Length: 518
Figure 1 (cartoon, rainbow, N blue to C red):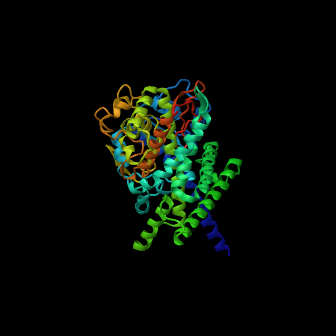
Figure 2: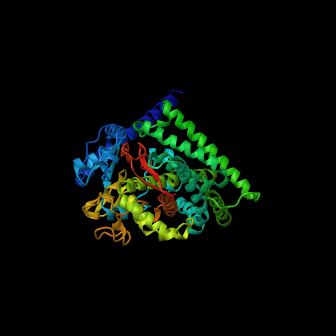
Figure 3: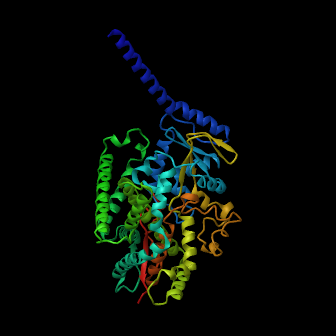
């Protein structure tokens, strides 16, 4: 027994020592080693602070940024949208890094390097875990390797051109309902009226994705939309806690509510999916919405190859439909209205084009491709106000990038918004609203740099699968709005493009709306 006791104590000590070594390596030795490598490569940033890194200053500047709008209306928004990142890049130059806990994040602003990273997803996968992202979405956004290839193959049919045509009537119907609400607000008023258009546009995007994703179950879909909106707000309340180990179990009110919402979201989605499966099996429902098409494609994959997506996988893809599908489009539509409210000459040009293409008849899917002026406007809005202003990739092994060998454990921040506002790429007017730069297409809009610096939907193999869906919805919404209303910014408008998951106007979008349909 005495020998057994000594062996047990020895094993216990060995385990504790090994565990302690891993902790010390994680919180101190590895970060200091990576810091030395970064500085040897010419990168500059703050010295590593034990465990927290730059998180305290990061959270403080984000909180301050969210508390107030930009003092003046400008499209030069990088310092406001990414306050801490902009501060570090301004302080240390192009080759800068920050510490998010014990992990360094290096800024990549060279479009060619960004293009190389995005074209090599196996060498530069998405960071795992990534607390903010992983708490809200999953699916294709976070899946890697063979699993991603399989899921992309299964989901692709949901976003092909033929199915997009089928969904067009649902998109048009939702846009018409929003426009009717605005007409009620402006009926009998000769002059313009102040309206915060953001809640309407946000709800429009939720309605569109609810109808196109879940068909007849769209009312339940709206519940998902509301839960996910609350989840994003709760995450911002917990920003400082996100990188702490065991964060899910810290008993704060926000954390408790977040975990309750997560369970409710799973249950609601599982119920919708089960109901849709049964309706398809009994012939009560067709496969003409995103969920139906996905389930049909998944069944085909299982029949042909024996394995497809699990219930959990389908739930994660449905969550992604909502965040990516609704937020991307709502942001594009609202910033387009803000830009056209500022630059009314483009509002007039777009309205005249819509009248020329459609006359007094209803919009149709085929006609949308003839809206060249509106397309240029949307391209320019996506450049100035990209839905995703920064994305990250990671290294899990020593990896060559350009002329560097990057060690494992480094996060690469691809600074889309900085590239979109770079004067060396777009000219001295890079922060001005000039849709005419896209007159001859995207590849000719830059100063000889081609299309690689234009990244509103990312690029490479993992380019956004829903970009055509987003553009169709945005064109439809803007065409219907411009036909019936003229608008300009209200004196009470506060310019506040601040990133949450995408980049909505955090203080709303107050416009002076005038009905011109009569």
